[in-house]
Structure formats: C-alpha cells, structure tokens
Amino acid sequence: KDINANNSKAMLDTFTEQLAIAGGTIIQRRLEFLHIFLPELQQHYESFGMKKELPSLSPTDHILRKVRIEYISKGISYPQHCTAKEYSHILTEKFVQVRMYDEKVKYTSVGPHCDDFRFLLDENDAKNFASQGQIRLLILMLKLALVSLVKKQMKVSPILLLDDLASELDPLVQKYLFESLSYLQSQVFLSTTAIDSIPLLQSQKYQVYLVVNGQIFTP
Image 1 (cartoon, rainbow, N blue to C red):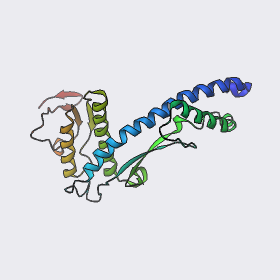
Image 2 (spheres, rainbow, N blue to C red):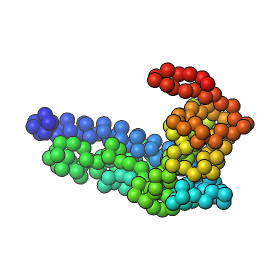
Image 3 (cartoon, rainbow, N blue to C red):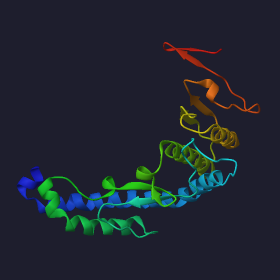
C-alpha cells in the first residue's frame, strides 16, 4: 500500500526482480520434480490398473488405467527444460504486463504462488471426473510412488503414514495395495476404526496398537 501511495517505481522494480528470481527457481524445481516423479507414478498406477483380477474399486467404480499430471499456470505458458534464469525472465516479462492491474488490486496476480497441478485420469480431470474411490486410489499411488522415488534418490527408507486405508476400496484392491506396501520394505503406520477391514498378510510383521480415551494399549 505504501509503495502504491508513494508511486515508487524503483522500489517496485527491485521487488519485481527479486520475486522473479525466486519464482524462476521454484518453477524450475517444480517442473524438474514433475519430470522425475511422473514416470514413477505412472509405473505404479498403470501396473496396478493392469491387474485383470481387479474389476472395480467399489460396486459402481472401475479402475482408470492412465494417469498424468499437468502443471497449470495462470496466464503463463512455461516451456519444458529451461533454466531457473530463463523462467525468471519469463516471469519478469509477465510481471511488467500485469503491473497496472496488480497495483490496482494490490496483490501479485501471477507467479508460482498462483500455480497448481492438475491430475488427469484417462485424460479426464480427476477433480471433476473421478469418484471418491478413484481419488483415494490415486492418492495412495502418489504416496507409494513418492516413497519409491525417495528411496532411489536419497537412499533412505521413509516412514509411510496412512489414515483409514481400507475406506471406499474394494477388498481385492485393498489386498493388492497391502502387497504393494510389503514390497516397499519401509515402516508403515496405518490408522483405522475397523481393524478387521485391513487384509494383513501372513508374511508381514506388524504390531497392533489400540487408542482408547487417549491411552495407547497393545492387545
């Protein structure tokens, strides 16, 4: 507000330059991560979807076979495989174009803080197209793919936290998910209100904890 009142173009130019530098780095790292992560996600999701024994997620759902992630930017089209400096230059040009509007509304209307990811299942926007069961499966596949990527890139086994895993999933889908968890060879914490719904495998080592009135017990 003070900048707008004082009409300090020099100060705005300074802020714009710094914002573009930071924003270019953020965008470059986001797109670089997406380039590395998407094949991992596709491998997990599509191999899971190709299991012929899995007819559905629920009595009314079917497993969607393809997954893709798009990087959505408001008013800017980012080319692939650019440097942070090149993305900063693109941002700078856009900031100049919208400056009069931004001064009027008193906020920065474009940049990485306005960007988002769009998840596509069989080329349909998951947000508007997918059911609760399909969304839940996608989230679980995201977690499994991220764990696999962390293990490959950082050479560590992260701890995986899953809340109410069995909800809204077909029992056969649950079974294959738990098999996938065992292949990760990572420590997994599951929370549920219905332990009988979790298809624990005979080969898996596990410990059950009960939480009652804020107290933890082992049966």
